[in-house]
Amino acid sequence: MTTNSHSLHIANQINKTNMSVKPHQLQQKVMQWLKEEYPLADIQLIHNSTALFQIDIKDDTSIPTHIFILKNAADRLIIEIYWQLSDDYIKSIAGLKTDAKTKFLKQLTQGFLLMHLNFVVEPNPQNVERIKMQTQIILDGLTKHTLVESLFKVNSGHGYILSLIDLIMDQGFDSSRRV
Image 1 (cartoon, rainbow, N blue to C red):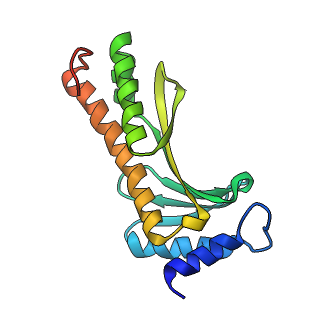
Image 2: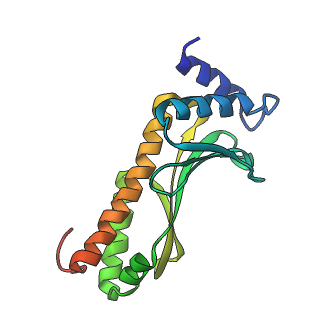
């Protein structure tokens, strides 16, 4: 059985109506793929009471990537980065005038839409302190390729935020210019 057909076989057995198959097989396969693709990363299983399983990947960015299947959404694998901004970044965004902050949030939204990422700004768009970026893979489409592609997507989202905030810090954010 090939890797792709094996993952499809496992994914087809794990769904909301038939949880007779434990997600352990899927967890093992995802862990194997991650270790193959990211041999230098710290990859750990994490206990999470709302998830069937959760895997955290920590690399040199010190921002962990979470991969999990929620108990109430067992048909999809979620890949997520939850980033706490540094004090300098928080101050830079907080110091923006209203029109510049609106433009920043609009460009953030447009960028994430183009990358097909869901995101949440916390505690609210007026006071940006944390940003959660997320993508999902429906299990019947889970392959090593789609997993790696989704990890790349959330990491690209993180890079996009950094470049947008760095622009604010370096040049200010002139609301009359296009970035």
